[in-house]
Amino acid sequence: MIYSLKRYFKYFSITLFARKERSLLFRDFFSYFLTRSFLKQNYSPFHKEIALKKAMSWLLHSQKSSIDGGFSTYKTIEGWTSSYPETSGYIIPTLLSFKKFSREENNIKHITACADWLLSIQKPSGGWQSMYVADDRPEVVFNTGQVIGGLTEMYTYTGDGKYLNSILKACDWLCSIQEEDGSWKKFAFMNQSRVYDSYVDYPLLKVYKITGNERYRKTALKNLEWIIKKHQTNGWLEDCDNTLKHNDRPITHTIAYTLDGLLESGLLLKDERFILAAKKAADKLLEIFNEQGFLNGRYDRNWLGSEYMICTGCAQMAIVWLKLYKVYKNETYLYTASKMNTMLVFIQNRTFNENTNTKGAMPGSFPFWGKYEPFAFPNWATKYLADSLMLELELQKEKN
Image (cartoon, rainbow, N blue to C red; front, side, top):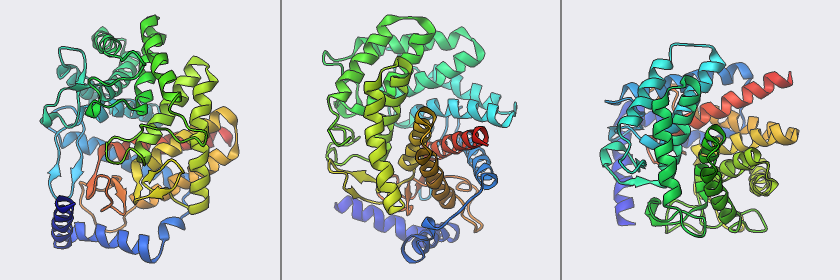
């Protein structure tokens, strides 16, 4: 508590004396507390496409700001971090999707640089480290799954065997360290079994579809079956947070990881158990969002919210609703996701002359001093905004 108060005092003090960063503080204060303007916006598909291009431009800027091929995060006090292997892994599919969406060829060099950098830092075990690369941490399950996902898309695009060899080594490692009950604990973050590893299962299943290796399917299925045992009757999932202290009220970021992994895995396996588990929780959050106009950062087992919005989790939930729309053709999913994306575009659309290191980026929280990634613009928040906008724009075009 004392450390947290000291950190916030430092961050607020420094930000108040930095002109462009001070504008971020004032803008969020007025729009959140005084005008509630984040609830009153209306953006057309044209404006959302502009927001998408701004987000993609910032992602490439974050890559150029690193010393390798990975993607960095910008913190208004400390500056740019080193690259983040996990999120760099799942930014690859975003870049490939945007390449197809925009029909631009010039970003393939950025994608290749990222993929090849990830190959260069793979651990001898087959896994990838946690946290930023400068932290030099041991390999972990979740982060490894995200790099597998990115490299799988790269292999599908290029057919280059070096990516497949790396993927298989990583998948074999994940299979070898799984617990008897189907969870991952050893080499998991904090050495705790967590349900958001459904977001590891889906990459494993994608590799199974490519290779036909039954071991990958069985490993993923075993974890998915462990996860749905944690599913409560009201849709809430136990062991869903990325902390020990707040595991009784997980963040929307890890909730959305869990739901997206369950949904995609269920669709790939054609197993309704996992689809319906994702749908039940997603429907509850949809109901809350439509009632309140926003989502809190955390939710307890009774779906009571706390803390400020987490922009990443909001964008991820829009993605889940859009995917459910594709399955069920329920217009409420499309409408709610569009409303969420409108709010996120407002948060991104800061009209003052801001720092080039923040222009087009999503903050960790809204207001941007919230507890999740305070005073920072994590690359994964912008990645998920881009994914959500692309998916909405594609679905709107198909509908029209």
